[in-house]
Figure 1: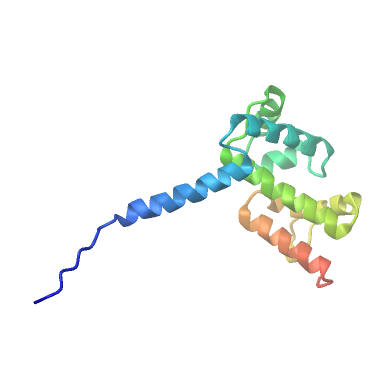
Figure 2: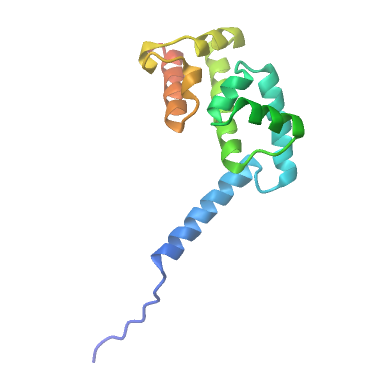
Length: 150
């Protein structure tokens, strides 16, 4: 007689949704977006990065795809960043840390950020921080500079 096989059907979309949901939750926890108190702490850090860092408020507003006035209001009222905004802030901050590490001097890195570079399509690196692909390009260029390939 034949074998009887029992299969449990699990909807592919449900499995995909669960995996996506899990990945989103991990990213949000990393950015402090699930806990409003943690998000506000992130906002305090972000304020200090805007004040002390090489990027101006205008540069940050471009990176976050947000009007400069809106960003300024957000910072002054203490309204928390959304999950996508918090992720972008974290990515751009990683670029800032990496650049300072590679150049060994914040002032040199700041100059580099503002100058157009042929390798980056003739754009200043700070103009590329408004997309994930642009951030990746800037990080790769920092890696090449670190290894003397430029």
